[in-house]
Image 1 (tube, rainbow, N blue to C red):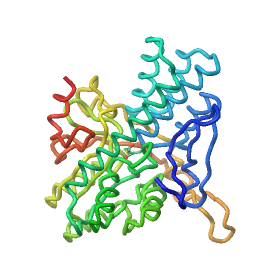
Image 2 (image 1 turned 90 degrees about the horizontal axis):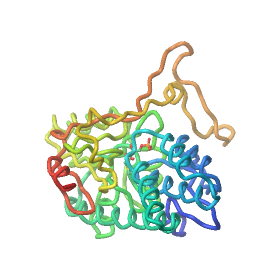
Image 3 (image 1 turned 30 degrees about the vertical axis):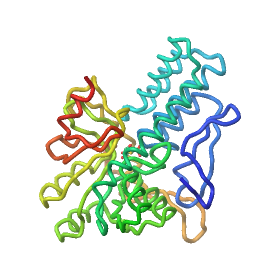
Image 4 (image 1 turned 120 degrees about the vertical axis):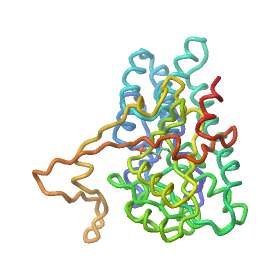
Length: 339
Ligand code: MRU
């Protein structure tokens, strides 16, 4: 991806440091965080300095490599990093690959670099397969951020959009705001602006309205974990969006690499769903128009309980197809691809 003319990945390793784009500061400030300790890396995942399943997977792999480089116990690092967030399968994929590499006597950092490169390649393939679904003039709805900031480069749900735009097709994106952390209005909108893709940010509850008016042709979302039966977990609100798409006869696609598929998880009901602090619902964070400084404001009244499940499960029967680096599959075919 290119930010103000310079090419970046979302996650990379340089001068013995793990480097991340500090996502909570976007879209207002672009800043790079440099991390030399795996515990700090685990905290960056937990606090969503880096987020999005493949970006978390690559970060987790580099965090393991940091532990090895510093001569620390990789099993303890595996436990600490593995406890950072529970839903994104890629986190466990990333740390699992490094554990296997170490068991096979291979170099942890080289393996982490390989994982990051594979993520870039799989995202680009997802973009190529997914763009074949996009006709000129299509209006696409997406939820959360599933672009390059959520991966190492290109994206999952947004990669097909970026590929279609590079192939000179006109695409308009309706980006759901994605309460409570607003990954849509903060990150997807930022990416689409950088890529010159025409778009509008809409409140999450406006998507059904635009679908019912015939103004959305297709929905594409990413995923944090895909169960063997094709059920998928993704950012809270995805399920509601899939229901609205089904009610309006709109195709609903999920884009994800095979690293997100959990062969040990039979159904969506078995996917652990992260519960985050209610403060992410009761408060909002942004830039004050008065001072130009970052500020947090309370929205819900003091005394109201706020609940904050971070993901929901969309059942396979609401999903038209899953766009992967190996092709586009029906949800039912995903499990068979693993054998
Ligand atoms: O809580 P987040 O921001 O990490 O959630 C991210 C999502 O839900 C994305 O849609 C998902 O990781 C797939 S995108 C590559």
